[in-house]
Length: 553
Image (cartoon, rainbow, N blue to C red; front, top):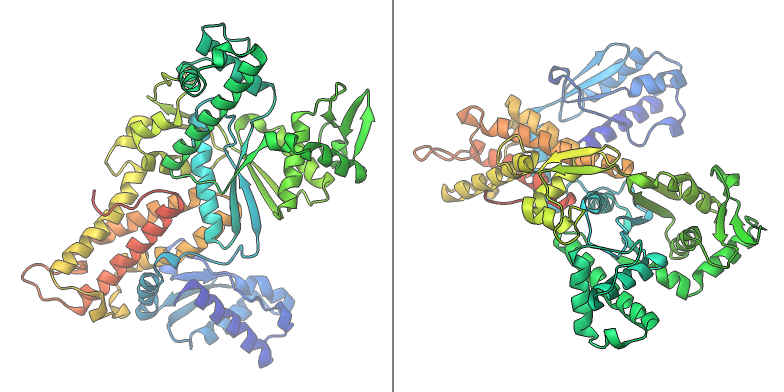
């Protein structure tokens, strides 16, 4: 019996109590889904609910009286061994071994679909993350958002949401001119301009630009800067895309800020906001009255010299997302972007959206990896690609995904490389490889899933703990999606791995494979179902984090 099935049984018991007059409760007050959860103490049963405390007042009765009535009705339900009333009206429910064990088959037969839900079905979301300037390599800060953003996209999709992962390319403004001038300087032996870009990567770009455009040194300076800027931009952007793909991060949309300006979208956005009454003119500039929507000051859209601000591009970009059919817009921004929260929400309000519903701005904190070396190419940063080359994609992604985004993070590179149980990614991946080893040994000894499955045989304490943990996975995924917290999946996988290792190391009678001189029994076959259920959930969960599930380690 799954938590969903138990929830349905509780709803049915409430409906029956209303139908026979025992419970004086409006039919529409009966919840379609009754929340059940695992008790903190195993001796309190498999599942618990406080539904009696929630509904008793509406029903004109006491929580305990309602709980006792529900307990009697549930006690007659197939698959439920016992129901106890605790305290003022809590229900502690124990399933019989067969009903609990049936979950193993449910998980294996569902395969990759187990854990996927429709809790966010109907939500259409644009998820923007990283959005680094295309003027240099991706660094360790971008790495954290790459891992978290991609995991979040995967988890949201697993919960039924329609998600578009988007990278906003900051390819407009004076920074790009300085970038082009820096490349030109390295190509011609000139001085890098004030505020320009340094590092060996600029020299690398300059050499490649010269290969493409050997006439670069002979061009007039303005034309040469424009050529260097464009060629360097395309080369650097291509590197960013390649590095992210190698990190397992794929974007559905690469959106160019420059195209916003070139297409007239910025001017059109200002005009639209003016029509809605939120734009005013002062001191020769054009302003957006964001103070009407909790911002600390009004924001300039167009400077007195006629040049649009970054904020104008932000407004145009938001309207673009709205026009492209994204009711939900999630921004993942770095630690230095706290000031963007109110101004982006103000843009949403000015655009006619609900800033509490249509936009979310998540701020990530800084991350440091001890032992990591500064990039030889960039000089003053730790590059994403160097970090992955040193530690490995799986270890980096998992380590960054297992902490809340708003937590400042310091990791030790050498710890992430250790193949010990103290290293969380190794601990989880090793559990998966163990399940695969059990499968290989089972095949050698003739233990086959299709030959038998008797869920009542899964009655050992460690098996009950493992089954209980497996039932939680869909709820964990749904919760991680709802709260935008991928770390919940990682921490769940570690708990599941712990339960599996305990079961694997328990009494010899729990072996899924017989000893060489031992006959194959239905107990072995049934435990193989449980083993494979764990393998399925570990693989599914690791996939949500963008981490591989190795079959051998």
